[in-house]
Length: 582
Image (cartoon, one colour):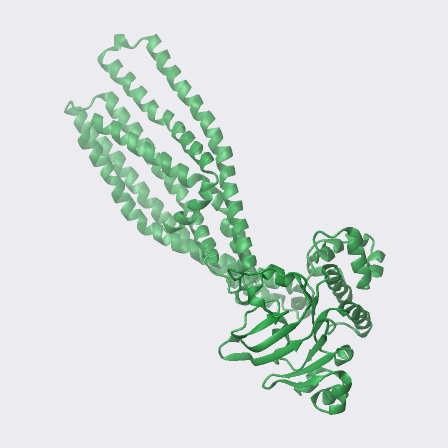
C-alpha cells in the first residue's frame, strides 16, 4: 500500500476529474448488470406465463437496455479520453518533481550514480504511470461494483449456490498472490536492469571514438550482450510468474462454472431454481469471471506502475547533502573577499584532502594555485560555490559564512571556466546565453567579442545560430573554450574560478584563450588552477600546494623565482606541473 499512498497526493490536483471518471465507470457497468436481469425476467415470464410476454413489454425492455447502452457509450468515451489525459498529467507532474529534485542533489550523489540509470528513472520508470493512474482506480472500482451487485442479486436468488461460488474468490486470491509477489520482485529487478542497460549503452555511444580508435567494437558488443541477456533472464522469470498467476485464475474460473452447472442443475431439479434463474447465474458468473480476467490482465500494468512509483520514491527520499539553511540570505553587492578558516575536507574518511587549511584572497586579487595532482587545488575551488561542504572550519565571502548564503545567490556571483567545456545541444547563441538567460542578442554579441570568439562565429555559415552538436562536437577545443569564456563575460560575476582552462589546448589556441582570460579576470577576484606555469606569471599571488604539507610557497612570480624553491625548480624544468610530481 505504500506506493499507493505515495501517489495519492498527485491525484489531489485532479480529484474532480477522478470523481467524474469513477462516476462514468459506474455508469459503464450498468449495461452489464441490467442485461442479465432483463433476460431473467423474460425467461421466467415466458416459462410461467407466456401470454404476458407481449410485444409492447419486449419493446419497453429493449428501449430500457438501449438507453442504458447509450449512457455506457458516452461514459466510456469520457473514461478513454479525459481519464487517460489525467493519467498523463500525473506522470508529467511526477517527472517534473523528480527532475527538480535531481537538480537539488549534491555532487556527491552524482559521483556515485551513472547518468544512464538516472535517465531510466526519469523516463522508463514513469512511462506506465499514465496507465496506472487512470486504470488502477477505475478497474478496481468497476470490479468492486460488479462483485457487490452481483453478490446481492445472486444471494437473493439462491443463498447456498451463491456462497459456494463466491467462496472460490478468496481461495483464488490466496493462491494467485504467491505468483503476484514473484511478479513484483521480477518487475523491480527488470527496472534496475534496464537502467544498467541504458547506462552501458550511454557509455559506449559517448565513447564511440575511443572504441573505434582501439578497434574494441567486439569487446563492447560482448558487454552489451551480457547486460542484454541478463535483462532477458529477468523477463523470463517475470513471464513465468505471470503465467502461473493466470493459470491459477483460470483454474478457479473453471471451478466456478463447474459449480454453477452441478449446483444449478441439482437445485433446478429440486424445484429451487427456475430456468431464468440459472440463466442469470451463468451470465453473472460470466460477468464475474470476465471482471477477474480483466483485473488479471491489468495486473501487469499495475505491477509496472507500482514498481515505477517505488523507484520514483527512492530518488525523492534522498535528501540533498547541500541545501539552504533556514535563514539563508541573498547577497547584495559583492566585493569578492574570500577566506578559508581552518578548513577540513575529505571525500571519504580515509582520504583527507584539506586539513586546517587557511587562505585569504583580497577583493580583486588574482591568485593562482599550482602543484601536483591530489594537492587539493580543484577541491579548494569546488568548495567556494558549495559543490561540496566542508567537514570542519568555515569559508567566508565578504565576512559571511557561505553556508548562511542561499545557494542561488552564492553561485550567481561566481563564474567558472573549466578544462572540460560542456556545451548543450543547441545553437551558439543559446550556449552563450546560458550565462544570462534573459540577455539580449546585442549583449551576447558583445560577450563573444570580449572572449575573442566573434570572428570565428561570424565565419560559420549560420553564425550565432549554428548548431554545435552534442557536447559541442562540431567545434574545436579552442572554439568551445572561447564560448565558455563568453558565457562568463555575459554573466559578469565578481568572482572568477579558472580550472586549468588552457591545459588541453595547442599553443596558438592557448595564446588566444589566455588573452581572453586576462581580460576576463580584470577587476574580479580570481582563482586560477594552473597546469602550465607560463599562464600564471601575471597573477598577484601564486600558491604552491603539496598533498602532504598544504601551501608550501606563496608569492608573485618574481618573488618565487628569487627564492629558488619548488616553484623555481618547476619553472626552470619546463613549467609543467608533472615535473614537480617527478
